[in-house]
Amino acid sequence: MEPLAFYTIFPYIAQMTKHNGDIPDTDVGFYSGVFESLFSTVQAVVLIFWGSMADRVGYKYMLVCSLCGMAGGPVLFGFSTSLWQMAVFRGMTGIFSGSNIIIRSMLMQLCTPETQARTFSWYTFADIIALFAGPLLGGALADPVSQYPAVFKGLSLFEHFPYALPGMVTGAVCASGAAVAVLFIDDSRKDSKEEPDAASGEREDSQGHHRPSIGKLIKAPGVIGVLCTLSHVKLLGSSMMAVSTTALYTPVRLGGMGYCSRQIATLIAAQGACETIWLLLVFPFLHRRVGTKGILYLCATMFPLVFADYGALNELLRSGSEVARAWYLVGLGGLVVFGSGVLMASASGQLALQNVSPDPQVLGTLNAVAESCSSIVKTVTPAASAAVFAIGVREQVLRGHLAWFILMLISPALFATTQWLPRGV
Image 1 (cartoon, rainbow, N blue to C red):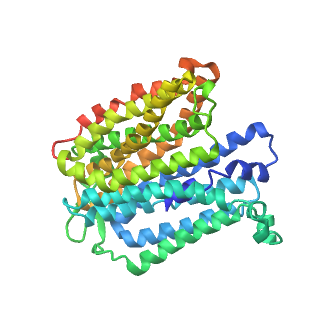
Image 2: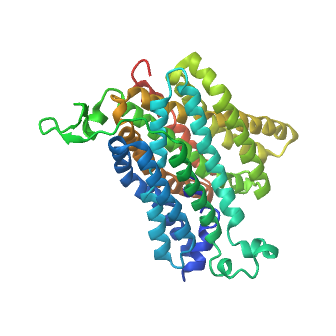
Image 3: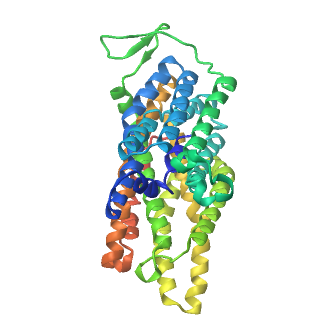
């Protein structure tokens, strides 16, 4: 639900900002970026609360609370009529964005060593669906009076609130998720009252079970290595998404591909299809053969090759010869097929997080810590990556490939973070 709520506003946030605020066109991009990142900024602060409360009072109860809150946030955001309202309701949505870590913790408790690879391949696949469905939903439903006058013209609700419909649909999806959780999810964990242990700083439940503090949890063997690995994977993935979407549109002479909107949509759809194959078919097979660390090493090898491929494709297009065009098609096919495989690193990181957890009773808190780190990265990385790409294109640094070159330099750090993971992960 969270990726859906996060990405839905991307196609129309600039237009909504201009519509609701009396600001010059030059400032629209700044305010749009603030609204986009506000969700992740607030999320990074509150996730520890959601994870620890889920461990204490039960996953199902906190999941329903999170989904109900997220059902209201997008609706109120869509009915905003000023910039301050947009900021408040976007932040409100971020406050209730704890469902992902709770669902992930429940999956970790339910799956076995034999089923964990397939379970988290499906979980990552669901995230990808939301990542693609969010922008499509937002773009298709924003300002319906202008897009579909035959249906919506004359409806005063959508004439006065042109961006209410995508928020209403997103809220309905979250509300339906809450209903499903209430009716069909069985939280089998036994409720227990906890008392703090004054000597250790840990919490003890009614059965004498000690829950480690967050500080001790982070210091547990292998946890820091997994957190660094997950954060670096998020850094590379977020940067690649931010830079690639801009590079596909950028003219060839400046370092991009020069694609139109239809070509970009087709390429993204093809990548989505390949990601499905990698996650649902290839990932479980590879995990049985080489394990979590083996897949992370493979992705660490693939990341710099993918980044280099983007720059190479532009150089082939700049050449313009028939031979270069043929090699361009080969390289593009490789980018679509093999470039989609790097998302296996995310699923592998989730498996590693489960395996280094010192106690099944703190999975919610551990997931919250990991997701908080990812949220911080997600807040900073897209804007920074886009800024570096813009500088490289404007100044023609490395013929417009500055961002790809920097990503190639930092991606091998995934080898180092994977090396920190304990044996048997």
